[in-house]
Length: 453
Image 1 (spheres, rainbow, N blue to C red):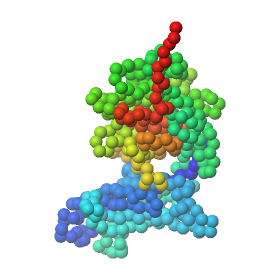
Image 2: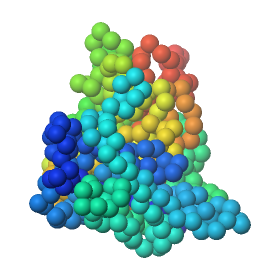
Image 3: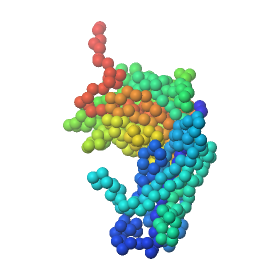
């Protein structure tokens, strides 16, 4: 499998410094006593914002950028790079892209459509993205004057760098419940790599054991299956028995996503609550049996947001408990993008139209240490960008698109596990649908048939 070229552009190590003589009489609006923030703009990408810390004039140094959380991250596809560098046109010449940063004093937000912050200055950083396609590049690291450089001008500290971040791109050829093929995409080439088989087990325990014999072979996962309540019967409304099996082109089963805890309406309501979520177990083959790889919980958030809440845990072989890699929510009406990025924020070219979820440093990782998946988290094998997956909103029947970082895939089973997770995420949107609403026919169990003797 050949990956697609991506470039990760990160902005970090933000700080502001004013000379002592430049401090105004109204200390309430000075950066030393008021919060500061900045907006970071790259052409055709959504604007990002970040808090800016104030450093007294007597401090002239700043911590290394690699030990700091990125303030903003842009993930650029090949088409993004061509557009920003002028390569999209046959007769165009290479041009230099530009990152624009506006620094404000005051709190972020707007009143009556007018920004509440006071503009302190603007900065422009040129970007040679052509060079960044093949090797890491640092475009700026250190202090820069805001406006004309004089002894009284404010100084802004930042680090702007880019590095190649290739990924495998996969797309379902339809909704997961329709048992589609999965294609790998590279430019204009679409190559089938997996097939999916969706199954809906009957509510009867005997029928269930016959309809999915694969589960009987989950010897290595029986403890997990029983502990998550797969055999628990409930007298109330529920959605259960869904599973999707990923096959490679030879027909071998390489990953499974199985609903092991039913999605049940909480008492007195028609929604799956956060206190009693449904659960999927993602399994992959290993040592002649099926082993748990990850656990996905999902529920329906209350309130005006009305979102799909979720939590995804990695299940390492040597750990007694799962390790949270992502916990957030997605819009039920619009869908969104699920992201696991152990380096920080992730904004792509489609983020302006697609709501997304985020995942930064894992829950068990020392968040303030700046490790972001490196070195200090012994149980995690994943680093940097891990994966992203689009999730259709309620009633949507599109084809989910997913990206997986090259460093996360060493074999077919690695990629298949992420495909199974993506399918489970998409199906969770339907599993968490209000029980007062009907599901699509592909997700509804067949009516019971009378047995004639």
